[in-house]
Each structure stands twice: as C-alpha cells, then as structure tokens.
Image (cartoon, rainbow, N blue to C red; front, top):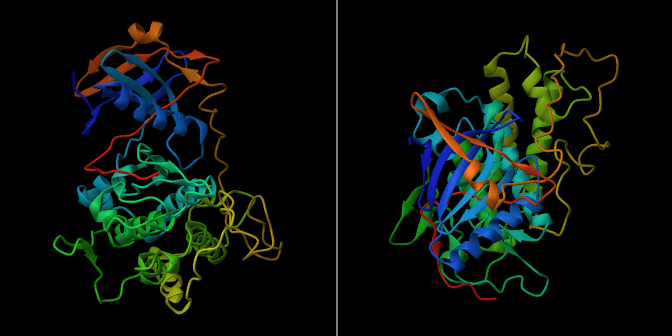
Length: 390
C-alpha cells in the first residue's frame, strides 16, 4: 500500500479517525525484541504525559507481535528539514516573519521540555514537523532523558545526530541542558538562513562563517564552545517573543489575541513585506550588542506572550491605548479540541485499523476507544546511539 513517509524505524501512512473526522498520521514501527518495544513505549508514554501546543500530539497506539502502531497528529507540510533544504519552491514562500514565528515555536518547545527537566538529546530540523500556518512542533522523544538534580552533568556520549550535536556530547564529555541549546542554535541558523552550516568531518565540528548574517546575534551565544556560556532555551524564547511583540506594535495589530493568532488573522495593510523584513532583521542584528547572560534556572515563558521581564502584563497580549489605531481583525473560529478524553487503540481494535487507497494517497481508518491511556512516537533519522551513563 502506498505510504506518505518512510524512516529508519518504520513507515508512515495518512489516515482518519472514524466518527471524529480527524486526519492523522499512522506510523508502523518494526519492533524486533522486548528491549526495542520498551524504548518505544518510553517515548510513547513521555509524549502522552507532556502535552504542549508546540509538541507533537499522540492519540493512541497498539501492538502486534512484531509491530507497534502509533496514531498521531498529521502535518501536511512534513519535516522542517525537507521544507527548508529539499523543497525550494516551498521555502521560497517563507517570509522573515514566518521564519521568526517558526523559530519561536521551536524555542518554546525546547524551553518547555527543560522546565520539566527533560533533555531531548536530538533537536534537529528532521525532528520538527510543520503544519498549517507554519506551526512547528517538536517530535521524536526516543532519545529524551529525565535529568534529576543528582544526575545533571553526569551523562556521557549518548544519542544524537552529529551535525546538530554539541561539542561536549560529540567528544564524550559530561553534558546537560545546554547541549539542547547548541542544537537549537543550529536549527535557528537553518530557519533564518535557509541553509546548513558546513561540517568538518575530520574535526567533527561545524564551521561558523565569518560573514555577518541576520540571526548571528541570537545564535552565536547558543553555539558557545563552553556549555556554561550558552543562554538557556527560555532566554532564547523570551527574546524571540519580545521581537515578535515589537513587530505587532509596529503594525498596530496588538489586540487581546495571542501572538500567533495575531499574525494568522490579520492582513498587514499599509506595511510592505520589505518594511517588516527590515525591522525584524534590524532587531535580530541589534542582539549582537547584547551579550546574552549564561543560563540561569528560570521558568519558561508563557506560551504566546513576552514575559514580565520585558513587559508589564500576563495572560494574553495587552491591548494598546485607545489612541493607537488598530488594524481590523477577523476572528478565527475556535477549533474543536482534538481530544475530550484520552484515546487508545486496544489490541482488540487492532483489526479495526483498515486501509484504503485513493489515487496516490494512502488512508487508514482508525477506531479509537475512549477513557483509556494513550501514547506515541516519531521517527529517528540517522541518529547515533552509544552508551549512556546513569
């Protein structure tokens, strides 16, 4: 049967959930032994217990003797890596504002994990999925690890992908949350520059170009050689939040909506794309003169707004005074919640997963039973796996 994607560990199909009309991705993963199943189960359980708007949502799973089937969100634009590096027509459509929003989504998702004391260990553009309105969500938690207070810095060469891997991880040294920040810096470079760093295979390190580029100010501190000199993911998310909010002020579109809703529902009448692009690039370049302080223990920023550190409000974005002209907005309908309760595909319902082909697209219909736990996972692409000390 035709499929929409294939990775190292399995095949992905497009499907629908009966009676709920939800389009989903259905991933069949070959499980060779009990150890492999337990590793995938760990990832499934983590994703089900750590829901966030910028983390891939999982609806259910089931297991047969040699196969694990996971039902999760469907992303019509696929991997961020493919969009940026393999689909020039699609990446050419991305404005600087789109890229700023996407970078913000990824930064918030990593900050969210770090607040849970979870180290992702494989942050890369291949593990970021892009959906409608260029919403980006982090996926693939098979390498994720919970860091307890007595184990921080005690991890040696673990899981990851060399190109996005922090130097301390690459060289088998102790590492912690700053390793994810380094990987996030590589992803931000991909997003803003639409290209990959050069990679020196002999030195096992990326080559940072000497020429200036738009995200240099925020990105270079993230690529600091010494982990203690890198900012936290929270600091990065706060900075991008603040820049996006300033763009909203520039465009006079600040309302009681969240930041993402603002830029999805408003038309920027009277402001050319060139003006917006120049403003964002100027804001990013000005960070060059601001040395981001080394990471400190902090809570991550609210989901859609700048934090109290920068602006005196909480909750939704504060409206501007009545004297400031606002651009008209089109209220967006509230989407139906993706799940009203937990969903799980039981073993007995395994046979109810049917498939049908329509043209070149594959669809599988799934019945999900309610009031049971659910779990899920993502593909691992060219990921190394070495011993990890406890």
